[in-house]
Length: 181
Image 1 (cartoon, rainbow, N blue to C red):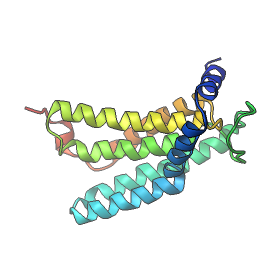
Image 2: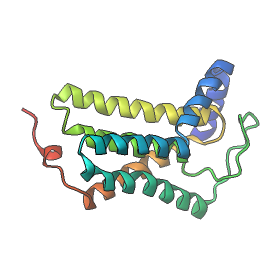
Image 3: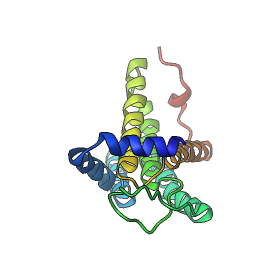
Image 4: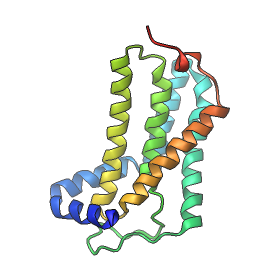
């Protein structure tokens, strides 16, 4: 399966250095790390008088992390047992909380920054950077042997759906839909 192939490829092609980087990426993007980054963004938004984004930030990120936990407990998929996992975790695998948290966080940053980036190439770069960061987090979880590829894909889809729902009921920013000259 794709899960097994991705896991064994990641294990076969990564060594201690890559595992160390993957571990660092995972620590930064743990639920506590994401909530800390969210608090920093909230303080910056308050400082920039952009407080109207705070409810969306809170709904998407802490709300999304709670949604992710609820889905994990509903599905109850065991973690991979490939025999090379970097750590043994007592929580469930599906969907990846680290991957979802990073997708919630970077997705909201794209939404908040979108109106400030006018050039199409800048908006493309914004989307690319956010996407690459989420892929790095997902890859770190697979490299560490604590998630299946399908856990990470589901987490990204969960995050995109949750962000869309939160934006639908959240504040409207006319610049989001405005055409860039």
